[in-house]
Amino acid sequence: MYSIIKEYIDDYRSEIPIEWDNTDIREAASTLAGVTRIEAENVIAALIANKSIKKSDMDEIRYAKDRLFSDISGLEKTNVDENVKDVGGLAGLKKWLNEKKELLTPEKRDKLKAKGLQPPRGILLVGVPGCGKSLSAKSISANWKLPLYRLDFATVQGSYVGQSEQQLKDALTTAENVSPCILWIDEIEKGLSGAGGSNDGGVSTRMVGQFLFWLQECKKQVFVVATANDVSMLPSELLRRGRFDELFFIDLPTSDERRDIISLYMRKYLNLDFIGPFADKIVELTDGFTGADLESTVRDLTYRSIANSNFVLNEENIITAFNNVVPLSQTSPEKIEAIRDWGKERAVPASGKPIGGEELSQKKNGPKTRKVLV
Image: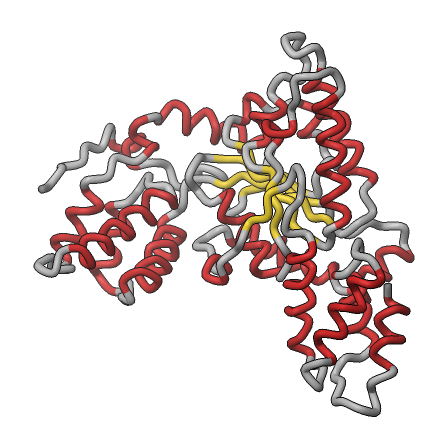
C-alpha cells in the first residue's frame, strides 16, 4: 500500500503543493490497509482534486476508510463525539494510554517489529458500574483518532453447530480488515460467562479459546478495549497475565475525581465554572456517587433550565438535585465492596491511587441518609 500511495502522489509533486513526507505516506498506508488498490487510489485522487495535500488531510483518509467499511457484518460502527476526549479522573489509565499511543506511530511500530514485539493489543476494564468503562473506550478512540467498532459477543452466538465460532471468526477478521481501529467489547462477561459449563455444549469455552488465540496472534493494529461489570462471571483464562496488556480497575471516583467530573459536565452542559466553597460542598455531598450519577444529575439540571423558564439555577436548586440522588453505593453497598475486594488483588487502579483508598462515608460513620427535597 505504501508504494501505491507514494507512486500516485509523486506524480503530482511538481503540479500541486504536497506537505506529506514519507512518514505521512506510511501512516496513510497503514490507515488504508485492507482496502483494494482502486479504493486507495480513489481516496488519494479525491485529495489531489482539491489542488493540494496537507498534513490535516490525514483525517480525511480515516473518514474515507470508515465510509468504505460502514456496513460490516458482526461489528457495529460507533460514532464518537469529540467531546468525549476529556474524561474526568482515571489519571493512572490516562498516563498508561498516553505512553502506549506513542507506540502506534509508523516509526515506533517499525522499532517494535525489529525487536519481535507487537503493538499494544488491548486492555480489560473492570469495576463499579457507571464509573466510566464504556466512556473510556470512546475517549481512546477520540484521542487516538481511530475508528471505534463495537463487538457484542451475545449477537454472534448462533443456534446451529459451529455457527457461533464462525461468526466470531468473521467479526474478528473484519476487525483486522478495518484496522487500525479500536475494537470495543462491552460487558464481555455476558458473552463468555458459560465457559467451563455444559449448558451450551462447550460453545462459550470454544469462543473464549478462539478469542484469546486471536488476541495473541493478531498482527494487525487492532486495539481491544474490553469492559466487564460482573467480575465473578469472567472466565479465568481471560484474566491470566499477558492476555491483555493490562487489567485496570475503575473504582468509585475519589473527591478529586468527582471535582473533575462535575466541573467537566458543568462546563459542557451549563457553561458554569465549578470552583470555590460551593464546589467543595457539592464534592463532599456526592461521596459515593458514580460518574454516571454525577453526569445524569447535571444533565437533569440542564433539562429543567431549558424546559422551565421560571427555573432558577441557584445553589439551593443544585444542592436539591444532588440530594435527590440515591447512588449505587447506597443501594448495593455489599456489591460495591465485593467488586472492590476483587480489584485490590487482581487489577491496576485506573485512578493511579489504591483501590478503595477513600472509604465511603457510610462505612466510616454509619449509613448516610439523603434528605429528599422537592
